[in-house]
Every structure is written in structure tokens, then in C-alpha cells.
Amino acid sequence: MLKVKAGDLDKMGLLFERYHRELFGYLYHMSGRPDVSEDIVQTVFYRMLKYRHTFTGEGSFRSWMYHLARNVLVDTAQKNKRMAYHHDMVEYDEKIGGDLAADEPLQKEQELAVLQEALSGLSPEHREVLVLSRFQELKYEEIARILDTTEGAIKVRVHRAMNELKKIYLRIEQ
Image (cartoon, one colour):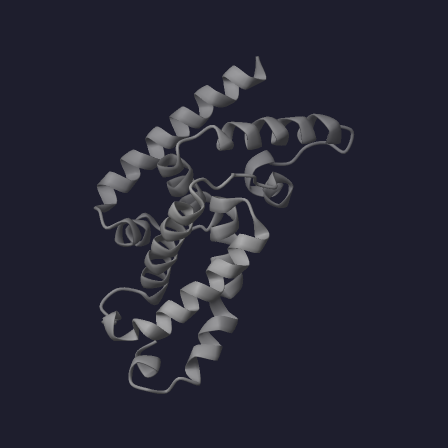
């Protein structure tokens, strides 16, 4: 990004190739809409070019990218008033479900459906920290930079989000 900032705009294509899928995944988890997520990815990379002068190189590029993506997501949500959340948990069954015997696929599918419903019941703030930490696998330090807070605050938010997710999950399961 520092080369892009210095005027080597050809490097932007390389950044796009490296990060567009990761960014799409984050945006899809937050919006639940692939078409909107694709548009937002394009907008984020446009803003990277437009605001390249704001990248200092002191923090990681990923943190700066997620910060921009978050701003675009908020702008889009305000424009559309409300974005629906839907998340296909089947893609992430290894991270969530663990190893199950071959004769239990229906039970696993039902558990994933309950988990998906529980995630959609979380507040946007709790859902965001869980998506960033569990699905995007960002470190708490990076999430703190993205959300402009401390690492300790992120740990507390993730802990509270997991507790809330557990409560919602158990309530739905019953």
C-alpha cells in the first residue's frame, strides 16, 4: 500500500488479488447479501485509492482495509436503512461443529441451523466481533485497531458476545 500511496497504482491490482476474497467474506457475514458485498468490496478498493494518503504504514494494511470496509458498510446500511443478516454456516462447519460420526449429518445440519439463527439474533456489534475473531480469524490487536479501541475491550466484547450467543442458542434449542 505504501507503493500505491507513492503513486505506483499498478500495485493496487496486486492488493485486490490478495485481499478481495477475505474482504468479501467479512462483508458477506455482516450483510448476508452477496450482491451487496460485491458492491461494497469494489467501493472499499475505490476508497483505498481515493484515501491512500491516509495510510501511514504504522499499523497493518489489513487493519486499515477493515476499517475502511466497516465505514463503507455503515454508509451502505444507512443508505439502505436496514440490511438483513444471513449466514451460510455449512461452509464453516469444521470451525464450529468438530468431528461427528458419519451417521449424524442430520443432527449436525440442525445444530448449524440453530447456530445460524442464534447468530442472527445477536446485536450487530456482537456479531461483528465474532465474525472478525472467529470467521476472519483476526487477532484481537487487529480488531482493536479496526474498531478504534483497546485489545482488552475487544476481549471483553468477544467474551460477552459468546455468552450472549450461548444464551440465544440454548433458548432456540429448547
